[in-house]
Length: 539
Image (cartoon, rainbow, N blue to C red):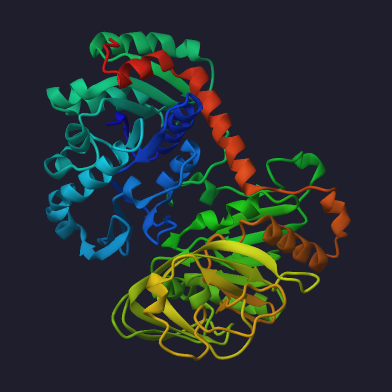
């Protein structure tokens, strides 16, 4: 069975995911077959595995760092909030249902067999399992039914690193207070403290480290500096959603001024915002997430992202005036793209006969000739194909990604956005009951370059585009097409921004994981970490 180490934090967003990913990469570099694990994840940023199962993006990122294929066993319980009081429950990649928070709290212990089966499956195939906790183990009101922090550590007999976030201040109080609120048995599981996100000279911390050790005999494994690394974020706490990005981190920004502004609408229940990470890295592109009408001023492209509640977020767009501004700008020729839930919003109507979201029927934004009917069964599949909407020469460009939605969309006009094939079509076949123009289901006479037997996805009508494919911008071909499309519209000579530059998302991620591992290795006592793995004394 695999050796195990667990990363817990003093609070949410303390850097647990990044620390776990860094350790996954370090162990991989050291020749150990390593897998990540998080028993319960709450996030709207999800992913579809090659076998059509759903899991949280944080463990996908960690699996990439470990150099392995993501699988649902790495995140057996995924909660996708549908409201302030309830979530959709996904167990080992399959939807179990929607539950109010109080009901889920009562049933958590019944999920322990699912969690242990998933963990044991990984532990039988890997050398090391890096386990990530959630929130804080000091949430003593949740201790009785804990399946993700110290409760899980006990089930796995896992030693714990406790990480504190110095960037938010009060890190010594965080660490001491967390340990003080634990039982003696739980406290003994903490083998070392780690301080995350430090900016400055470590020398000024030394007195505090010594004083804290005098008060509670838990050693420090290291002080990790604030890491300027660019990897996928877990959820809506991400700093990515409040910052502006532009001109690509691989280039000298002083010599690559942004020529185009992309605005992504920050919906209240935004999901899969990692769809747009690749666009942030394009030379000449400035991308930001916006939530107020005035922030759309000067936009060259507007994107409506995915959402866990399409109807609820469309109401929000109407109430705060964003819908009116987007419609007006689209009428003036500004391109608008909708992805998944954003695609559904752009249509003429949304019907919810089964009460999947809010029930009833509501008017869409009427920018695309499509109608969406919500279904009780979720579509989950990876896809690959081609799209021609942004190609300057009409030749389709390669796309790949995944679909994850609960609606069927009927196209009444316009043209398909893309032609795709399904890598795992089990969930699609049950829904493909008509031979009409359901987006993603109808076999079409495909244009030159489309995959044989491909199916239609999405819709294009003038300057408005929509697709169900998450990750549609991740291929180099699509990134080049989007940048060329925007450059042409702005009257910028494409050669000014080409210079033979290409961008590989896969290569870039590998560079970032290596960078993260180097920083952590240089600032964490890896001898101590390996002694912890071997269950040797480190005090």
